[in-house]
Image 1 (cartoon, helix red, strand yellow):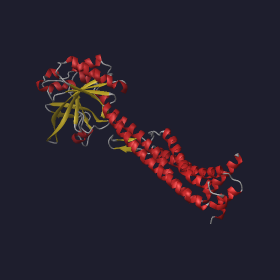
Image 2 (cartoon, helix red, strand yellow):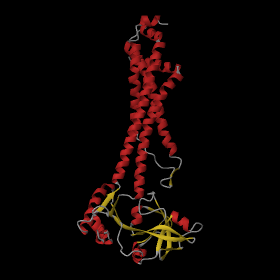
Image 3 (cartoon, one colour):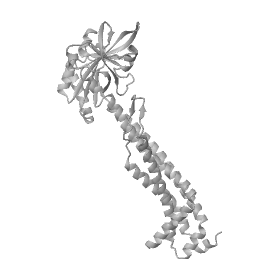
Image 4 (cartoon, one colour):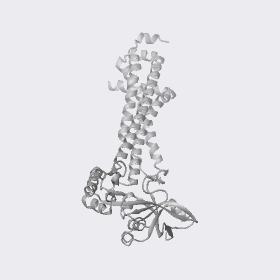
Length: 411
């Protein structure tokens, strides 16, 4: 029996070699389908990784709180505003590892004799760490700037280019409102928020204590708190809300939010797209399976005399069935291996070349790892092989049922 099986496999391989072009065209659908499965899962994993990186670029594990002014809060008072005391309370009474506050104020600056509206943002010391701001030149604020209320400022990359187009802005002086500030650095957001945060394209950061010289009442517009791990974000959100409610009147309303909902929505979208694309890949495999069945049916018809001769010299029905199932499996299995190799080589080739991401305004380094799901590789091979066996059974069964006498008379 083992010798007969080996001989049957040899006959199947020889039959495929004799029709190389037809065998290749038949397995082409399997190549495309199996490659699609691996690539779709790879793209989904890469997309998820990129989304996580973008959210972490905005601010990792952050909770932000604002005093709500809309709705029934027509009787709100300045006592309801978030203060520096609230920041200290959040720092002491919650599990936050960093706490910061900001206050935004629209002002004007004079550029080449023309007044230009910009946004000035007063920030506390830990804001840069929480928001992952990227320093391009100079330095960030230190404790001395905060304590001594130094007239220092940082400019966004766009504002620095407008105000000092042909020189280094660090060390230069700018007049904002009625005060003169010294530029100590130039920065940009690591991941652009497109003006949806307090930082706009043309913004200047100043130490928070300096806001008392620009506004009558100093309070925090946005409170930021950062947890140690992503798992602690929901608990920290509740804690910040409880602290703010306990320190203000019962009628005051505060919006305490985090980026978890955004991440969840992005993951849901990624999952839905993955499912849709996997379905498309399975349809491709289904079509390739139909192609295998059609080609095998034609093969059975063309090789009727060969089947009759083999049965006449003693080949049992199961060996004829095994021969044609082996041919179908070789076509689908080889196609699956080629498709998987192509799918793996594409991310490997991409990782050798740096890619510019416009949203992040930076290059993904050439040595960046693109995640490949080896589970998808196994699934792609198994599904492709099963497709060949499933669609190859009907032609194989038809060949096995042929009568030797009728087969030998077939022309």
